[in-house]
Length: 82
Image (cartoon, rainbow, N blue to C red; front, side):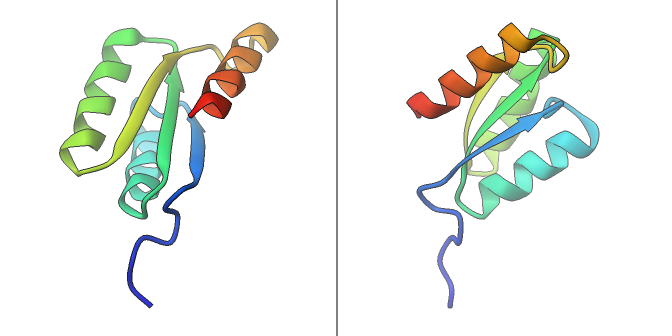
């Protein structure tokens, strides 16, 4: 089969700046997805984005609180623009 099974897809990962979220975002990127990671800390998001890019992934970090409806709406709108 080969190739990248998620090429052309966009994945949103909340809490993607560290821990399990970062691991999931990295795996999605390795499989070809353009990953939109969100978290509340801009510094952690920047580090996570750099880490995913270093693996060859396409990533966008968005500061957002998943408990905020307005933040989630903005996150989804941003992902749709990709």
